[in-house]
Length: 193
Image (cartoon, rainbow, N blue to C red):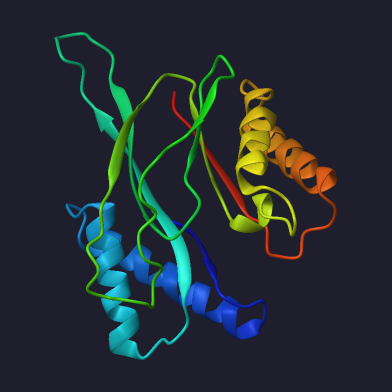
């Protein structure tokens, strides 16, 4: 899970901590539920507990899929859902990158009964998935589409780098190119083997 609560104060940080714990506890308690079902439970818990903040987030799970014939290697796929959050970025081992399209859904804290949808994509060996906050790509006066394309290029150029180096370099490039961020910045990278 990667999320962003509206606001930049201690209360926003506390709410994000609560949401993270809710999501992890829900996923642990209901391991057969999809990311969309987990997100729905979190949204209902927010309403039931009186959490009045609004938040965006993406909940994702990497699944292992057995080979289709004896001796065939296992495959991995990503299953995710979004509550108003920027789309995951898939970076293949060859450096090609694509934003994983899906309707972003309603942010948490707006409509707990909103239908949550999810998407699934196969992860080729060596592929990296990036989850990020809007603070990495949004800048006042800048075209969001251009910033998302820049993120894809920046990550694609570093496709084979160790994850820590990839994250550091992408964040540095994205922040350097558009001036200082006025929002929180988070970037999470996961690589399929």
